[in-house]
Length: 248
Ligand code: 6PG
Image 1 (tube, rainbow, N blue to C red):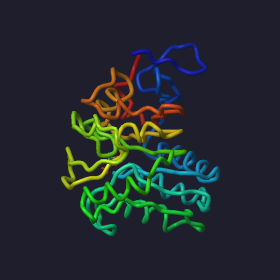
Image 2: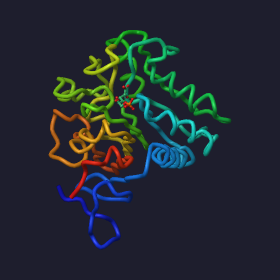
Image 3: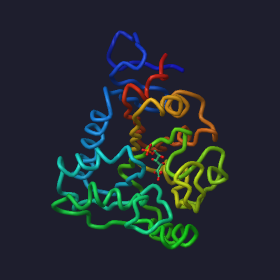
């Protein structure tokens, strides 16, 4: 793997903080989860000011970033909000990705988005996927935040799942990891149509997956390795623990 450091003499220390570029992903390595949250929040705030279509993610990693993004930029009135995946639970369930974003971000804004396009997981995966696909149409996200599972999954696209070969934009899916509830997910082509993709990844338990996703040959055993913006930028913001195996 060729990892080149931007603007330096080219030497590279394992998991040092800084900015690096692999072939197709910019890696931003920061000290810890708080710094990652701040960097993500800054980008989200900027995206909100510019306006457009913003895709949110679920999982636990974005929680800090969402809260900070609401503080940094309380006016999201120029945005429309979407999700890259959802669990098939009611919108007020603790497992709901919508509930997480509502609690940590949307409810804290002074001026909310002009539209919130939630995936209606409570309808069941087939119906919810069909509804969301209709609503999404050919919308292109200006900013798409994603997490990374410790098995290499992204959104609800799990290792070696048949969904990885689908061309439709929205898919019903099964969970490959906890929580084991049905899912609705964007497909690889839909994820890759975003203009700016940002992965937020923290913690030592993500180090192996980060290596496979951002520093190795792409393949279906690591769905996140297949996610790269077709026409825009792909950035992974990691803390040192998650970046520990990414080295020259
Ligand atoms: C979901 C997600 C999923 C998540 C990763 C990382 O609905 O579960 O969108 O892809 O981003 O599992 O989750 P953590 O941030 O909790 O590690």
